[in-house]
Amino acid sequence: MGNRLDTQGRPQRVTRRPVHGLLLLDKPLGLSSNQALQKAKWLLRAEKAGHTGTLDPLASGVLPLCFGAATKFSQLHLDADKTYQAVAQLGIATTTGDAEGDVLQRLPVALDQAAVDRVRDRFVGLIRQTPPMHSALKKDGKPLYEYARAGIEVERAEREVTIHGLTLVLEQSADAASLHMQVRCSKGTYIRTLAQDIGAALGCGAHLTFLRRVETGGFSLDKCVTLEQLEAMDDDQRLAQLRPVSDLLDGHVPVTLEAQDAGRFLSGVRRRGVWPDNPRAAVFADAPRALLGTAHVRAGELIPDRLLSPIEIEQTLPGHP
Image (tube, rainbow, N blue to C red; front, side):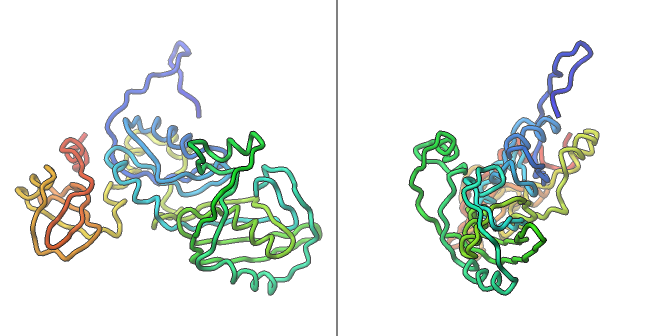
C-alpha cells in the first residue's frame, strides 16, 4: 500500500485532520507495529496517532491504535494481559527462537501428550524469563536486536512474568512434531522465549513458527479490521470503525460532573464529593455527555490525572464534523 499518485505521477498530498478514537487493527505479518500505524494514520488522514505496545513483524493479530485524544490513555494498555495462539516446531532450536534464525541444534523428538502435560505445569503461574537478544528491549539506549545483528551478546536480567493459562497440544507426523499453544499472559511475556524454554524442558528444543495475538486488554480479534478492509472503504466508513476514547478506560469507575464542577475539574482543580476511594476513575461531563479525562479519588476528593483539552472534548462530541 504505497502513496497514491496524482494525474502527473506525483505523490498525493494528504490533508491531515483531528481524528479521535480507538481503532482495533488486525496487524498483518511482515509489518512492524509502527509501519501498520502509519498506514492506518494515512488512510484516516489523522493528525496524531500512537499504538498500545508493539507486536513483532513476524506476528499478526490485535493491535489497538489510538488517534488524537485516545493517545493520552494508550499507556494504560501497556499493562494489559494478552492472549496468543502459537505453533512451535519441536526438535530444532534456532539463534532467534523463530524460523528467521540459524539452526543451533537438531534433536530427535520422542514424546507423547502425557509428557507434554507434565512439563506444561512448570510454565503456569509466575515464571522467570530471560529476554531474547532479538527483541526491542533496550540496553544503554540501543535495542537488543542491534547488538545481536552485530554479533554481540549482552547480559540480560531475568524478569518475572505470569502465565495465566497455557494449552499445549502435541501434533506429530512422520517427519515433524509441533506444539500448538494458546497462552494467556501478563505484559512483558516473550512467547518465543516461552516456546524455547518449553522445548528445552522437553529435552528436544523448539522454535516458534507461528504467532498470532487474539486478545489484549479485553479487545478481541473478532472486533478488528484489516488494512485491506480499511483501504477498500470510503472516508465515512473508515471513521465509523473508530471506537470511543472511553473504550480505553474499561475498569475505571465512571464519575459524572455537572457543568460547574466539570469546568473546574478541567482546570485541574480537585472536586469534593461522596465518592469512595478509587485509584482509577473516568470522569464525564453531564450535559452534553463527554469524557473529560481520568482521575483518582482519595478522602472524598476527585484528583485529576490526565485531562482532555476543551477542543478535544468538542471534537469528540457526536455530530462534530
